[in-house]
Length: 309
Image (cartoon, rainbow, N blue to C red):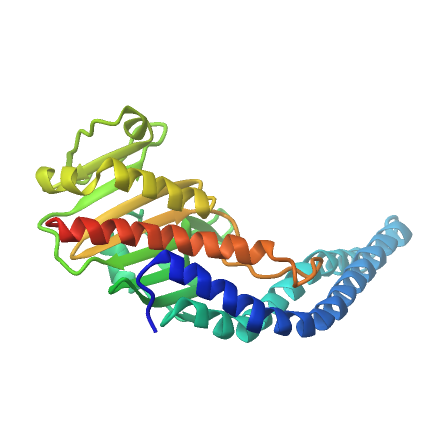
């Protein structure tokens, strides 16, 4: 099944959520409460035991006790987020396949849905050597293929003592939308930094002072770039950025695809927390708004395609 308008999509999402997702969440909430209790208990034991060892053996010459205390406190600090992450992954494995029915032919996966080669050739990102992906989605809407990947790009350098230091180039979500027609050029939208933006091609001047203050546009096809980046596109571009709570958003038009990179340190597509009842609708409302912002962009691109993209 594929939906061709946002109204039908929202209606089906609501139907699936209330009839199939909520009953599963009610059952799974018992496991959440038990896991939450365990996580809090283990964290408290680790922190209190570690602190007690530090106090009791602080003045002894044997450092082994301080080492053990430090390890216990460290475990106390990390046990809750680790159990939260494990619980969330189990929740997604149970819930997302059901919830995906509301998205027509969309599928959720932990495997990459966007090739790393596409990320490199978009020229949106600084150099990176490694890539990690979390949640990934792939499907079509309005006959346009969509791929969504929660991604971190990074590289390592050697520290002064031979320790590796991690440097994150990008963390957030990358979205690609196939428009069905190739672009004659390559157009890039980058956010302006303290020293402006790095240039790849010739700067494109747009008649929007507010957009120009925040973004830098360059392209090797000036005419196509002005046709693509309309006031309507700018509004939807900002809507996607706001929906995902992005620190900044960048975009590439290349080889028949629009790639949108939204940088954020948030844990995206989060559907549940150990300390919150699973029947809380807020995570699903956020999830829906994130997807709707992408569908609105596709609706705009579909209209642009029809008038001669």
